[in-house]
Image 1: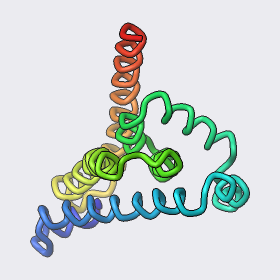
Image 2: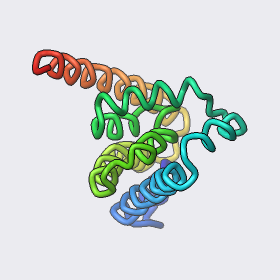
Image 3: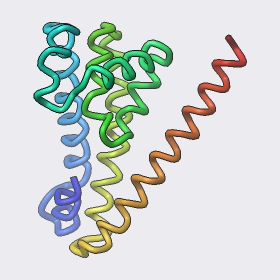
Length: 160
């Protein structure tokens, strides 16, 4: 998305179209994983996941988190590097409502797409600045997710 933002900066692409295509592409990839989880099932994922660096303990952790927090885990999972590509699997295994899944996936992925596109747009062709700000943005997103998850957990504990 950063190169596309840079191309928008140069006038070679339209930033709105770049952003929409990025969100739709993220949603398409997430839906593919969602449907693979539904069609192939848990046993297939466990048996063959090791070939794509997907281990059983990772699935167990994601499933546990997903079953406790549902839609919020789909949203926040999209913001966390290393989790975002797998969060669709427990959603598919749980047969999460497709409209809700699509909404929260698009919302979470949209945040990344917008940030990365704007980074490319506003920083332009200064690669050193892109690397510096991207690291800070990742840290800010992880901290924000942790705070949001803590507040959600605290609220759920009080209500339950």
